[in-house]
Length: 536
Ligand code: ASP
Image 1: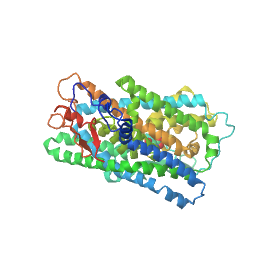
Image 2 (image 1 turned 135 degrees about the vertical axis):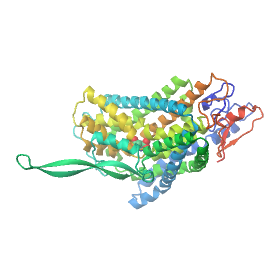
Image 3 (image 1 turned 30 degrees about the vertical axis):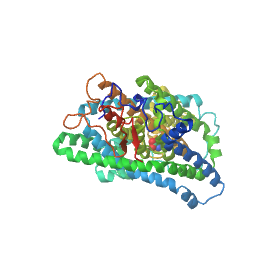
Image 4 (image 1 turned 45 degrees about the vertical axis):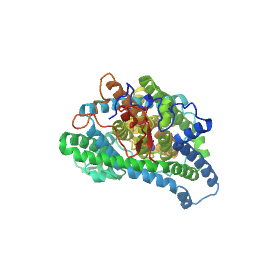
């Protein structure tokens, strides 16, 4: 693990004089010409620039191609490079999540693990509750569902999620934490369905009653929650084995590093993939005018809510706690946020997010690789926020006044159901039914939410992944701070098997630049994100 250098902490924000991957904190070179300076900035931010360019060009390609009245097959072809990006990211999720969590859990002292995990959970819970509250407040202020006259009628081409009893939804969540088969958890998860059984009741007059009986089905879709829990527990078990477990820990460590090399390759494909994802979506969109006319207020409510939480609340919390510039932190994860926007999937964004926080924001691997997979699975501020807006919106559409208890139920169930939401496109809409059932609102109106989810889901995913990244940044700050007063190596809580502090992180992705001005003790910090340079 990282060493403390002259009291400096290892969060990237602390190394203000040193170059980081996004070049924001480069020491000023007095004899650098303006051209050189621009060149350096462009090179340092190349990936971000390419990603932004990708989004913009994608919009133009989409608008241009849209008029060509393409057939469905041709639209599919337009989106093909984007589809490849999603496939690549999905391919990497399982090895990344499992290996990073096993090696993360195995490398952290169980006491520190519990402490870090506890703080992370508190942060995730509080921020999700705040997001839910913002959603409810926004929905009451903007009132997207009031005064609409009649309900908007939209063609419903999406499949509606089957309404589930609230208790069954929660039981499914718990069942998925304990997958019965690890192999099938990689592509299937458990979901309750219902069948109706008729029974002859012959007490007194013979009559027939129909009983709704729940039964379990395996649904397509990775059970990432089960894999996350298994990987953490397995990592802890490996650590407990002591020497015997070392080989396997090393195996998972190097598997993890190799996966991250793949991620850095995929990263350079992301701008192109995002460009075609955006273009494909614009071409595929049906009548956007009608959608905005009927659901514009709802969309605005969600997007403004996401912006308030993502640009003010989360950065505010980060600033209040760390006293560091939260927007520098945001800039460091820009590529990952753009990927969240392009893919609408937290899980697919996870690999790039790990690289961004480690290389640009100086979060140590032990923290990022432990906390980000958990965050991508359970922490969904964006989903909780839009679910609250959606619930109040549906109540307003149906002229159902909500009392305090119902609003409170919405807040709590939205927070809980966002945990159960999968980090996939439209993952949040699927669990929206839990909230509607809990407060007795019609689940059939989910079709309206589904109609505009392709847009709302994008800002929602940005917020989901942003919350995880800030969580990792805050944990890094917490670890740095709690070790600062002590003499000796930083993050002494995070120790290797034999009780010695972990060695500096050497990644095949990172080349250390020798700096003659650095002392021997500084080399560790150099490996930590300050003078990091991707070999890519
Ligand atoms: N698409 C979101 C995500 O992957 C989940 C959601 O629909 O809320 O984070």
